Length: 211
View (cartoon, rainbow, N blue to C red):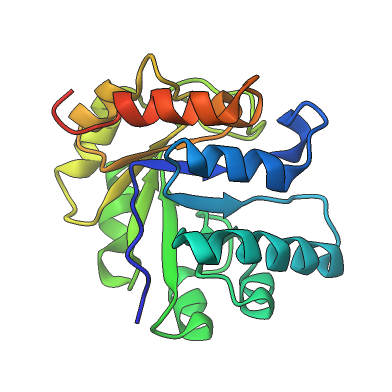
């Protein structure tokens, strides 16, 4: 049975932004502040080290009922028994990722446009990550920002849950939710914060429906 994540505040990790702090410490603080799902993103870590880190993060999150997703790497997710994988348009095809993961893992897919969302209609994914909503420096190869209006266009063509990503913080999270997202994915506004717990709590308050 697939996990049922709380998409409200979705943490995407970046160790380089953590001010020299241990990643597990930052994740733990963020979860205590209201993060409901964590995506472990490691672009430069070897496979063995990535699996070991994923196992440690899973050990932290599982007792708290918070799902762990792995960015891109289906092999790491399976090795660490993570709760799922998030893939982009240039990664493994979503249909193949689903076949390898099986039916009981979460699978998220990044989309940038209405057209990419339409193309995902025939694939068994659990949610779409939409963005970048605003300009962001945490992903050097990010496409041009689509704004809340772009997210609304994606919302008009799919019934899948949408998670906005890219340049989101407590100041703009509410408008992302109003545009049709069920949650906001955050990197620097939590990882680089003096207090990840307080930052996550502020974003969680802003991202509540109806704000």
